[in-house]
Every structure is written in structure tokens, then in C-alpha cells.
Image 1: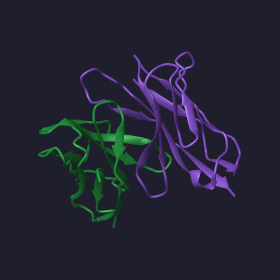
Image 2 (image 1 turned 30 degrees about the vertical axis):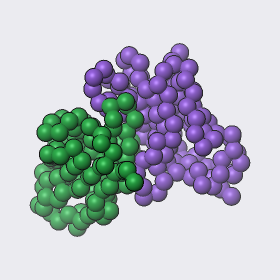
Image 3 (image 1 turned 90 degrees about the horizontal axis):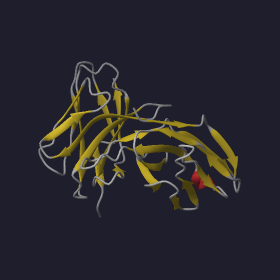
Image 4 (image 1 turned 135 degrees about the horizontal axis):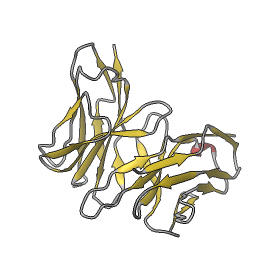
Amino acid sequence: DGGITQSPKYLFRKEGQNVTLSCEQNLNHDAMYWYRQDPGQGLRLIYYSQIVNDFQKGDIAEGYSVSREKKESFPLTVTSAQKNPTAFYLCASSTGQGTQYFGPGTRLLVL
Amino acid sequence: GNSVTQMEGPVTLSEEAFLTINCTYTATGYPSLFWYVQYPGEGLQLLLKATKADDKGSNKGFEATYRKETTSFHLEKGSVQVSDSAVYFCALSDNYTGANSKLTFGKGITLSVRP
């Protein structure tokens, strides 16, 4: 079954801690994306990658970092510099024809 | 820059009622337009799309027509079901040649359907 997986489903962060959210796809898509979703708002783009070993900042990249060492994987690290990290994080991938396919999401909560 | 505006919500309907969710956009060039649906606690699923003016996207009884003259992509369904209760997002893709397109989303609207 092809698709996008995200783990964990729930993640708890302590003050000053960095946490990493996993995103894996077996769709053979070149492009991958990270979005943040807050209640009552649309999705906001954090980072995106069009090809392995390359990525660009989206609209709200401050306090986040990513890597793209493999085509299948695009992990997102929420650093201690992100002062309001509580949100639902969604990963997506695309063939480049415009349509993006989303994973099930990770909900990040601050302890 | 690009933007997508959706009507304010939430929307509550009775089962078998007619549904219209308005979406208008601002974009340069010729974007592709999408409707995504999000069920509680899940990621987004593509509902339908249209890639050029006057195209009609359709899926699961939902329809939307790409209207360039009114810059709109309104979502309609003739008879909603309880299982249609979800959040609906309108989005556009910038379609730059040779690049993997970025999506711009509206804020989403919550639809609740009563039995």
C-alpha cells in the first residue's frame, strides 16, 4: 500500500527541548512539505523540499529545521526557539503536478 | 501574492439538504484549484480538483466549477449525509513551470450534518 506515514500520533515536548517529527512516503514523490494547523486557521507552510538534499523555508520557518537525506524521508525538528509549538503538524508529498497527498498528522503538545 | 477566501462557518445542515460552500481566490497566472476534506483527528484528503477555466471537478457527489471570470470555485452537493460532516478546505496551486507547486489554503469551514 502506497502512502505517507507520520509518527508519532501524539508528541509531548518539555520546555527547552527539541523534538523531531517523522514523515515517510513510499509514493516515489520528489517533493515533500510540512504544514502547521492551528484551530480556526488554514494550513501554513513551514518548509518544503523539491528534491533530495535541498529544501526551502516556507511562510513560518522560524523555530523549525528539516533535513532531506533520502527521497522517502523528510523529518521536522521543532526547536526550543519555537515558543508556541502546540499545533497539529501535517506532512505532504507531491509529484509536481499540483496535487499534494497528506499524512495522518502529529499532534504536538507542550508539558 | 496568492490568497484563498472561504465563507465563514460553521455550517450546520439537516441530512439530504443542499450544500454550497463558497470559495474565491486571488492569483497571478492560471492556478489549479482544489477542495480537500479533513475528518476529525485525520490528515487532509483530496476531494476534487480542476486545472483550467470552466473545468468541473467531481467526486462522491460533490462538484465544483473553475470560474475564472468570478475567480471562484464553489463546492456543491445536492444531498448531504451525516458522514459528510468534516472540515473543508479550498486551495490553489501556483503551477510554476518546472517546479513542484506550493498550495495556498483557505481557513477551512466546518460542516455538521444532523440526522
